[in-house]
Length: 419
Image (cartoon, rainbow, N blue to C red):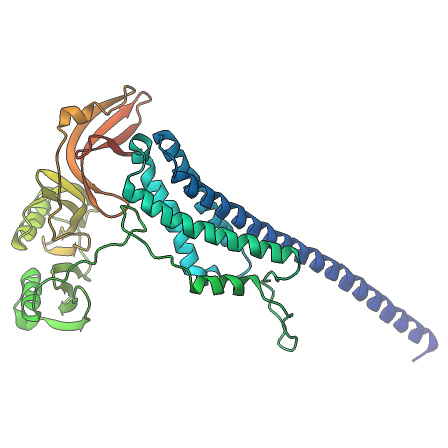
């Protein structure tokens, strides 16, 4: 290699090294900025959690002394807002918050319980039982807030380390000192986040009682629904549990039966162009339900694809549609056979209903800026899964928009509005 070539080659190497060094320096600077931004974001999330839990605890404590309905309702809103803010902030902390399930369930429970109390508290304040529940939540919230403030102080004084989402190198040991996640996990292990009874989405639900169908009866029911001899059924699988579900096949048909009754049925064949009318298919669906002993049903909606007609039926009790309890029946329009059946939402239990308000009284709950286009008796489910007897008013507002207003027939007050 000539002297000139060596000089040029060396120049290129030096330039490459200088460029690489500059790139490394820039990348390191940016990485440091990213780390500082992540650390700041994590600290901000933790500070938000501390403030939110502190605010929630203060509102719960104030609720123990409130007697005015408006103030009681306002404090319920503050508790709900604090719990929601704390839960959202905890999701931004730099560690897996799924491990803190008791703390998360407490925040959800406290917020939802306050939310469920707000409507009644606005008029009547809190009952003695509700005050006892609020006092229990208040003690836990104050305890949790005190822990978070102490952890925040330790973080600020350097006695506690904030977790990082960066993966540590295996040959580099973790820095000494307790981390925030470990401190919260220690508190989590002794924390009582158990739910208590109230009508909300985090309340304890009663387990559905198992039915009394035996294995032989379940197989007979499956054969009856499929319209085949019991010997033609082939058991595909079964498993124990509250419902004791068993599934059978018969040709292209799959039938699932629980210990309470027929649960689902479906065919896998292709349906050719339809020859039956929708009305004839509806009659087939109703005959099928009648054969199962499900006669107290009312059609609420249907669809027709040209090959399959599907009908949604709601259970009827005391002339009211149980909107949360019903079945769906699909009929093949080429031969009128039952193509599919779904009763997963059907309730075999009778609802406890109190119709203390008549339709005329319920109609007085409608605002002046809407006009009623029709009314029917229905039951809807509360957040806690309890069935509420209601008058469903189909209305139009002043702009011609449709909405439904539900008036609780037990209390005589509005309980839901769908737009």
